[in-house]
Length: 186
Image 1 (cartoon, rainbow, N blue to C red):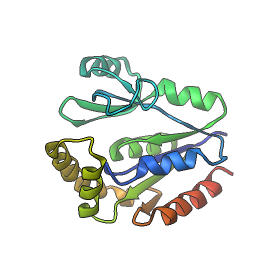
Image 2: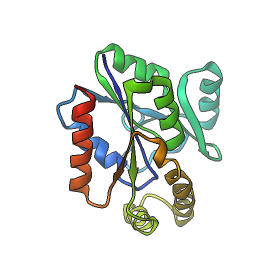
Image 3: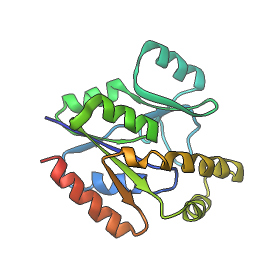
Image 4: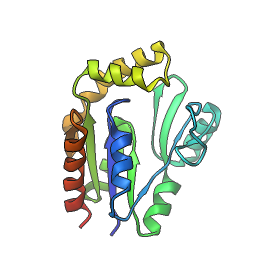
């Protein structure tokens, strides 16, 4: 039976980098592309990194019941997991990898129970998180401050996840993720 692997973390903690590493391993994994109402950053493309929807389109799909989970993370800034995306991957016999916010990750874990493994990627500190976000160069100072405020709230959910991966050393974090997934997808 195919399984779900859920990654959640504050923005800038390194979850997307860990997900990309994991997808390059041989675990029959496929990434579930999330939907968002934010604009693409840099080279992001619709249907590749995200399904980019307007806030109105997102709200209409919520009403239709198209989402497994969704969250209005900031005003008019929605993120969500389309049921159709997860169902498609599972129907193909693949394990699903999700990169979702903390509330969404816990909701998916609750929906799938033992069929899902929830991992929280913890930054070494809020200061390191600030430095990573600033180096990334994709957000305004105001957005970075919003992300840092949100990060402290999100970190309070870490104990509710199946495992916490502290991303203070990337090689160690990769090894921890690899060990957890190796056991889980057997």
